Amino acid sequence: MKNCSSIFISGFLMLIFIACGIWLLTMGIGDTLENNRLKAEYDTVEGQLSDYTLDSPDSYDPARRRHKSATYFLTYTYFVDDVPYTVTTDYSTGNVPALGSERTIYYDPANPENAFPGGNSGSSMLILLGAMFILIPTLFIVVECSARGLLPNTRVDLPGLLAGGIMVAIAAGFLSMIETGSGFNPFLLIPWLMIAAGGWTVIRSIFTIGTKEED
Image (cartoon, rainbow, N blue to C red):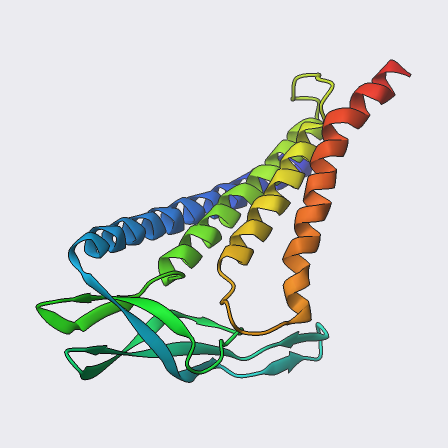
């Protein structure tokens, strides 16, 4: 009875995570489509990073022994008909580019104050978070099904293949959101290491299992 109860609770939590992921993914895709629609109607100009505003301060969690870097909203200044305007990103980042770094700004020609920066956006983060909320619980479900012998018997390690693919996808998503021109940060090596580890896991899952079965 306890085993059935724990399976039910775990399954319910996985479904909640997946539902949250679908919601985040839907919001992110919707915002992205809206931005793409506006890009077709708006004019563009090169803006320069002129300021950044603190979102969350630098902190240290002694219980988890984890250091959290400060994050900032980025403000860009752009000119339309020699009139200066500013626009701020709808997300914060710990990798702040150098002041004066350029970025394409999309603005409404009828009202230049209505604008948004090109490149990364809050909708991109929603899509990445939504994908994580869906893929990671899916991995746990696949691992549980494999442990119970519910997956088809193949020469490929399906849980390993999925785990490696998820590592590569998440790391690639973080790399796509890293601000350019912010200088070298050793923490930026982590996504590349994840891609290498995920790629190796995928290769090992495809080729190693068959060799073991033949032995």
